[in-house]
Amino acid sequence: MAIELRAKAANGAARVAKQVVPKSAPLEEPAGVAIGLNAAILTVRNNEPNVLVVRQDGGEGDGLPFGIFAPLDHRTLDIGLRQCVAEQTGLQLGYVEQLYTFGEVKRDPRERVVSVAYYALTKPEDHTTAASTDAAEAKWFPIGGVPSLAFDHATILEAALQRLRGKLAYQPIGFELLPPKFTLTQLQRLYEAVLD
Image 1 (cartoon, rainbow, N blue to C red):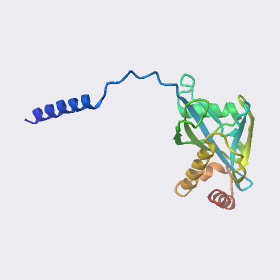
Image 2 (image 1 turned 135 degrees about the vertical axis):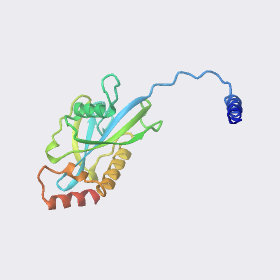
Image 3 (image 1 turned 120 degrees about the horizontal axis):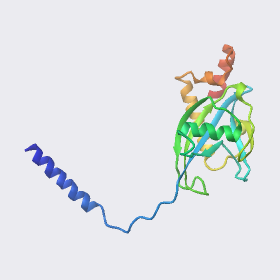
Image 4 (image 1 turned 90 degrees about the horizontal axis):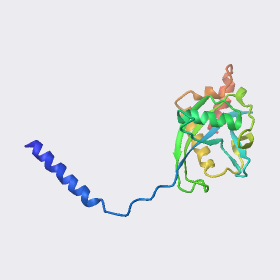
């Protein structure tokens, strides 16, 4: 009896599905969608939170370090991000955490890009950068003095700061921003600087 009811229910669902799906013209081939990798790279310099900003050779303005995920070259998104950042800025990333996926249709006027954003934390001794590939310059800016950022990079930066501030309350990730040996005063200043 139960088997009959399930079969009838399945047949009824199939009839409903047939009725719901209208016949229409075949879909056109969708336009390509690039997978972008963005990094809000944060540190503390002179007791003030800083972010790494790159200026593009192509005149697209200032932005966060980024690259396009290449499935044949990058085994994972994380590896792709690390390679793109190293190529663009010369910086080897330590602590990296996936932040959010940004996929607004018009976020990049050149093409449809769905971007997987990360935030990364670097220690003071890791601050040396050297712009390369398509970046004309890679420079640290205090959070309060960040230039206008291209595309939706300001939104990505704000999300990274909110995540960092939230995590400091329950996880000791602040150590990722300090030198191997530090004082309690340095730790206190770090928390005060990031939490504002």
